Every structure is written in structure tokens, then in C-alpha cells.
Length: 245
Ligand SMILES: NC(=O)c1ccc[n+]([C@@H]2O[C@H](COP(=O)([O-])OP(=O)(O)OC[C@H]3O[C@@H](n4cnc5c(N)ncnc54)[C@H](OP(=O)(O)O)[C@@H]3O)[C@@H](O)[C@H]2O)c1
Image (cartoon, rainbow, N blue to C red):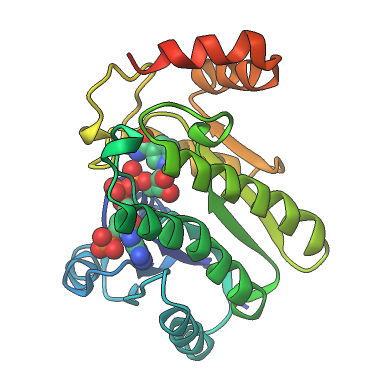
């Protein structure tokens, strides 16, 4: 009988995932670390300790995800999967390259679907699958149209899975506000209530060990946007127009 949790973090090499890896390693978890960049994953294992495992994966490619699931089967049952991998390309809708838009959909939305499909076979019975949405998925925001749409899709997917996989695995939704990572460094507007990746990691660990379906932070921003998203359109849309000016 071992009490050490095995946690698979996808999107572990940067930003929130890297901070989460450091925080969970500190707490004694055994980590399986995934992203596309194998060299960065190896460097993380060298830094965090060789009890952790580097497992390169491209979530947009079902064959890569299936191969990762097979390797995980050899490592042993996983207690939690935290799926954070996503792409973001801010700008005006007319300026967005269609191939980039398709890639964002494939990584963010199809990628979450690919991970959800293999999750029940990778997780121990009752294990946890956390998908990452965003406050940008609560209501369509200007400057990140396709990204917002994929995050709305991830929210919907997590809600569906929570019902469909009830009693099989514990499905959760992570909804970050603005976190200071390479992803948001490309925004050219003032981001309210920005938090560090370390603060985000602590909020995620606390949330995933509590009982709530949605882990959302920082609350001063998430509650304001939740209110915005339930207002009638005639009241909400003029406000979203002003958000990213
Ligand atoms: N930062 C924010 O303010 C914010 C706000 C709301 C929600 N979020 C969400 O939080 C999550 C993490 O965001 P972040 O800011 O930490 O992003 P980030 O710093 O850009 O890190 C993204 C991670 O995903 C990996 N990745 C990208 N494409 C991948 C693919 N196809 N397959 C596997 N891994 C892939 C990246 O590594 P490789 O490039 O090596 O693959 C990297 O490790 C995302 O889901 C994001 O949408 C972030």
C-alpha cells in the first residue's frame, strides 16, 4: 500500500503546469510530465528528481495520446490527470491565420477530448480528470475569439463528462483568470487581477483536493465574470466590448 499520489500533468513545461509540477513535487507526489518539448521535460526531471517521468505527447494527435496511455499502463494507475495544454493567439478576427485557428481548435478542444477518451483506462477507479477551461469561456471576449470558443467548448465537455462518467472517475473543471505566463505576455491590454503561476498552482491544488466541480481563481475576477455571463445580452455585450480596450 503506498500513499504517494501519481499525477499526470499535461502542459507541464511552461507557466501554470511548470508551477504545478514544482508545487506537487514539493508535496511528495510522483509526477508524469507531458508536453511536446522532450528536451524541456528531461530538464524538468533532472531538476525535480528522477522518480518523476518525462512523457512527451502531442494532445492534438490521437496516435500520440494513445501511445502515451500505453506507456502509462506500464507505469501503473494514475491518481490524477491535470490537462493544461493549450494555444492562444490574440488579435483581431480578420488578422487570424485560418491554419492557426484550426490548430488552436485541435489542441485546445480536440486535445481535451482525446485526453478524456483515454482517462478512464489510465486512471485508477475513482481517479481524477481535471480539464482546463478559462474565464474567457464564460462569455465570448474580443481579441481571443477562437480561444474563447474552444474554452467554452472545454467547459461544456467537462460538464458532459462529469455527468457521463459519474461513479467512474471524478471530472473537474479548472477556470483560471489572468495568470502571468508566456500565454498572457502577448496581450496588449491591461489584465485585471493578474496572479503568478505559483498562486495559480496553489489554488489548483487546494481546489482539486476539495469537493467542488469547478476550481476558479482569483475570485475577485471570476465572480465578476460569472455575473456578466448570466446577464441578458442587452446588458452583457456592451460591457464585454469595453473589457479589452
Ligand atoms: N495564463 C493565463 O492567464 C490563463 C488564463 C486562463 C486559462 N489558462 C489556461 O491554463 C492552461 C495553461 O496555460 P499557461 O498560461 O500555463 O500556458 P503556457 O505557458 O503557454 O503553457 C502551455 C503548455 O502546454 C504545452 N502544450 C502546448 N501545445 C501542446 C500540445 N499540442 N500537446 C501537448 N502539450 C502542449 C506547452 O508545452 P510545449 O509547447 O512544449 O508543447 C506548455 O507546457 C491553458 O489551458 C490555458 O488556456 C491560462
